[in-house]
Image (cartoon, rainbow, N blue to C red; front, side, top):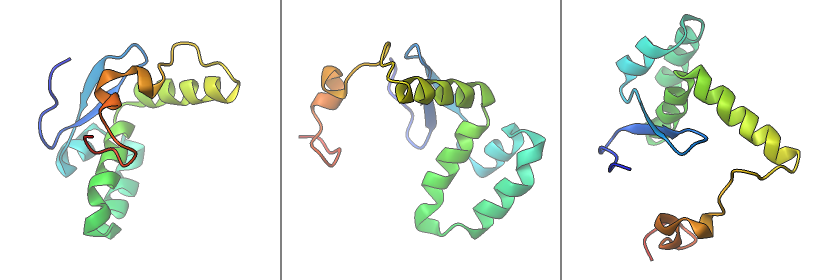
Length: 105
């Protein structure tokens, strides 16, 4: 997997693929389904600066309804107790080097 570009947003598919998402206000607005644009503008305009990155990341995912549906289905499977296809965090080498706060150990 290639190294993510600084400042870019990424989503991960169920098969482990990495999908680049829009990472600017304009790019997100342009990629959103038209029915969500007014809500996006209202939220972005009223979000405190310290929360803006997280808010934009959440909206970037909404530009890909297919990924949202895939993520929602994965959560429904887990709720039903079906953990097939999931890898425990301790089995992912990149995460094994992080402490409880998510910083490099």
